[in-house]
Length: 301
Ligand code: SIN
Image (cartoon, rainbow, N blue to C red; front, side, top):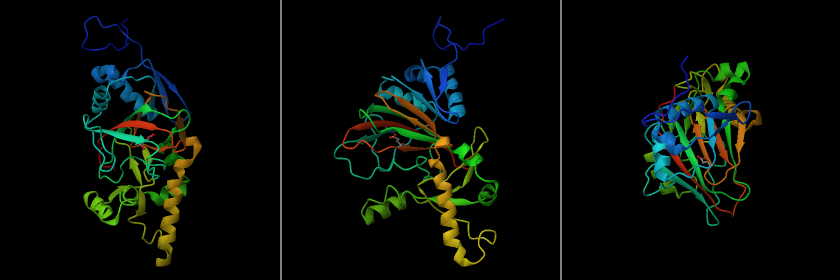
């Protein structure tokens, strides 16, 4: 009988290895991978394929002690697809696609990461996922929370699932990253990045699962005002905003979450199509430095 253990490709006499050890961190989301190097996975097709399959299963993966170069970080993330920069947060000048999320004493008080969100749903095609590495972390604080939005959808009451089937919503960079800008810059940002419209329930393109797809950048439903939802015009604004607030609040339910304590060189890889995250902003004025490779995604449907 032959062994089914995968072997690393590309190296003569490479040692065989067993499957990656993945320890689930909660019952619903998140696993820590042991004995894996991102630098190896950037070059090893079989190893990368295994990580990709684990990502679909656990939705967010954590790795410790990834003392890798920025080039390796980018090379690993690029195995998922092309990377994108961010219109407001700058990237490392030598590594396009590697966004710096640096906070210190002088950071302005706005911390847009401390709201439950999917990254960049104000894009027509929001990111597929991200690879985030910790460069510096406070001694205590600065954790990040991820939420399983497949679970959030599946545990909605049946009458809510019926009401939101077919609903679409608008997502805005203007109301989030634009909010602290002077009005002229805010308008310019909106012209470059007009609001995007997405289904309230998207289907995960790889697993086929249904995902609750509204977050803190979602401003309103675009097709709520129908006879099914509205008896008289007066019902429209409160009915729509109460339903949207209720849906957005689902991400805060602890049973759908995992919370990760960072150390220098810890890495998180998440599937942005079916999760949200929240970076806890409890550490000011301590320094926290993160670098994020953001992988271009597809248009939700
Ligand atoms: C993000 O919101 O993408 C960054 C999360 C973090 O800094 O922990």
